[in-house]
Amino acid sequence: MTRFLFAASAAALTLSASPALSQDWSGGYIGVHGGFGQTNDQDDERLRFDRNLDGNFGDTVTTATGADAFSPGSCGGSANGNTPADGCDDDFDAAEAGIRAGWDFQFGSFVVGAVAEYSGVSAEDSVTSYSTTPASYTFERKLENLAALRARVGYAMGPALFYGTAGGASGEMSNQFFSSNGVNSFDATINDDQADGYQAGGGIEYRLAGNLTVTGEYIYTSLEAPDFNIRVGRGIAAANNPFVLTPNTTGTDITRSNGRFGLHAVRIGMNYRF
View (cartoon, rainbow, N blue to C red):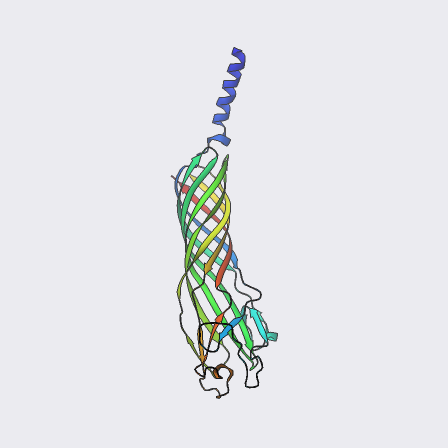
């Protein structure tokens, strides 16, 4: 019995000193991160029109003969020319870099905590619709920065922490409009504004020497894009121009059908833990 107790005690001491059980994730940390991604464009996105200016964007812009003035269709991206046959440039891949700070609490093998981040971002998505004129009409929005506050829940296994994360996000978004139509007038109602939404994802954090850790993660960001409408007036166009035909000769409002901005990102980072 004595020999058995001695062996059990020695085994327990060995396990308690092993790297698999000696990691402690409790405490604060600061770090940096960077990565690349892709905006989540809608393949069927198009422009929508409000002819009677009642705030409902479900109207069809028609010519004097009653034909659909935008029958050529739409594409995701920026126009290369005046017709769909000219094609559209796909949106650029996204890039981001930023800083983070957080705090974790460990309960056995489970770890819970919170992390705050701020990133500079270069990401855009665009949509183009074509009229029978022919002419192109492109809406472009760009995400310029991103702040987030997320919860983290993880499971520690030796030097690695596997975690899921989710929380709120907010970023500054700018909007632009381009058209090859040179006869109508175009006025924007709102340009730059904040976009709010959420982030969700997961990753792994791995301990290096000392207090340094390295992270790899996937994060999806979904933001409610700020309203951006264009008022199309007559300009120097003829009186029977489709944008100023009855029921409203003042003009026609245009917006894009997708009100959300989505971003898929894969990131790497490094933290210093206190």
